[in-house]
Image 1 (cartoon, rainbow, N blue to C red):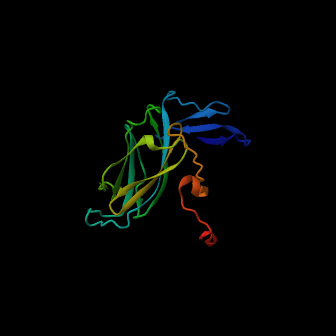
Image 2: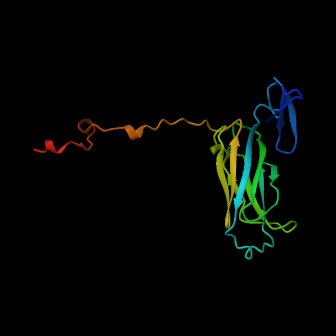
Image 3: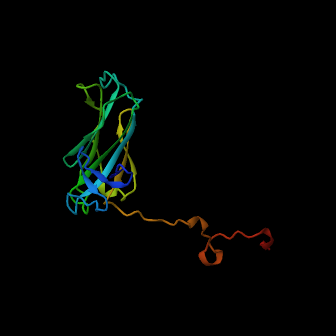
Length: 194
């Protein structure tokens, strides 16, 4: 959601994009409820960058080093810009929906990497699939498309579904064992050796 001010500087509302270039206005004070229904879930994918400097362009018959990524989610798709170079910075964010945020195990989320200049773009590597039920709600998770000669870096954030992050209080480094009770090793001074 993007908040925007009035001419006087006060908040007028929010713009709620759908990921397809469309969206809807949410007036100030109104709930940002989804027009999609109560069970529809939303997540974002930020395509940050790629680095394929180790690819052999002759083997893949690539004329010009141009990179592009296509993301697919159950019939929805988003395509990054076709950028020059072997290590471009995409910095593009896309929003997708899932039909039932309470059961995302059947959702097909994948990415495909392409290279070369249009209209000769070629798929490089295989289409890679990601499991949607492994993400945490509200926590950006790093993922990568592994392609020949490098990778494409992604950050996936589930907005209203996912596993709850478990807070782990790891104080195990402070545990000590009592030699008499636990059967552990006792670290005594040399004076006790009689």
